[in-house]
Length: 249
Image 1 (cartoon, one colour):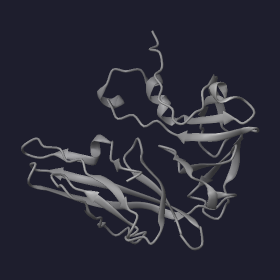
Image 2: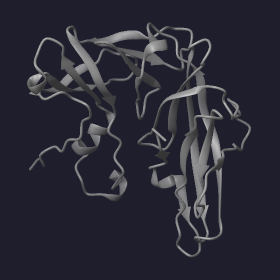
Image 3: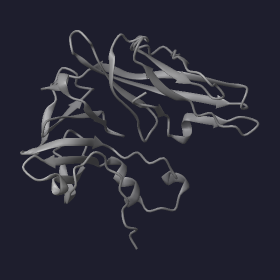
Image 4: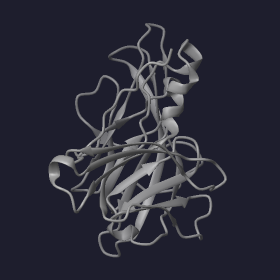
């Protein structure tokens, strides 16, 4: 599976009497076009079902997966594309588990959002990023990054970053797996990195050994313009970004 996701919010599962937490994971069955999950204590995946009154989408979906990732505050987000119309849709859901023991556990899944992504070139986009707090979906086409607010579905995505002469290869938010701020003495500056858009790009006119650029953008609320926080240049060709900040004293 090209994408495997699991809830990373500690509130997504709760320990049972034996102290066993349950952490289910989700994949996508590309042949049958459906979400499948591996439940706590299971060896094989099963087709996902969803509980609650908020039924926003069907599973199987009938669409092809383009992107899927967990988020800092619990929801798992996915982007699927209709194989015939090329229309592109977002999906969001929470996976919960209540682990009683390794052999006896129960879980439930809840849908949180779904809709069509409306914007220039989205039918060709393969790079997506969901903001951990705001209702923003970012996607890249060539050297441009667009922002779509899913609470305003009739308003097309607008360009927020234009990197002329560069091809964007990485677009993501780095979701911390823990420790969480409420249980840590770490400074807040470390956790603010969760909310910066990370962009990797390659300058088309430079040789591969120094064409790579890495940028971090602040993303304000209320659809305000993004601002550049930090930039590093002349890396080799960027295919992924993993980084560590120096500890502030």
